[in-house]
Amino acid sequence: MVGDDLLTLSRIESGAVERSAADLADVVLESVETFRPVAEAEHIELSVTSIVPSVAKGDRSQLRRVVSNLLDNALKYTEPAATCASSSAETRT
Image 1 (cartoon, rainbow, N blue to C red):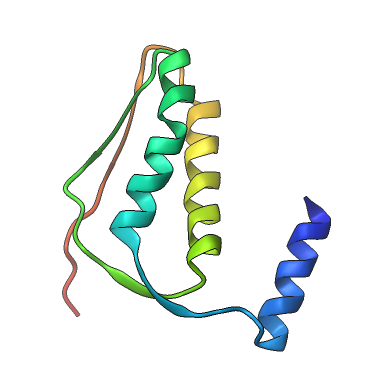
Image 2 (image 1 turned 120 degrees about the vertical axis):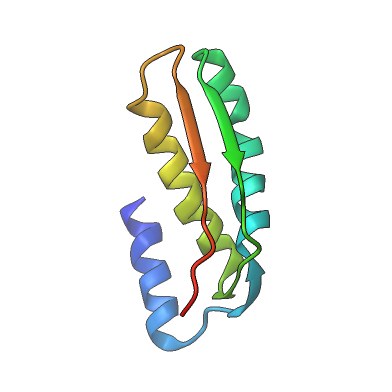
């Protein structure tokens, strides 16, 4: 894993990372569906509510990796038969 992280860092620093518009709601929902079987095996309810459509410019696979890491940690540290929920609120600047 450290090798992958160093390679990713090298790509970012060299500008070789593909940056394009990525729908964050799609990234979150895809990641949740990937982790749903893990949650169900632990009797953890995994739910997403109130996603506000958001677009970020970045590497979609790396954004998915970040969300997946967050979900993985949430499931690791959530007691069985609990609920992991995510929601977002619209912010205005």
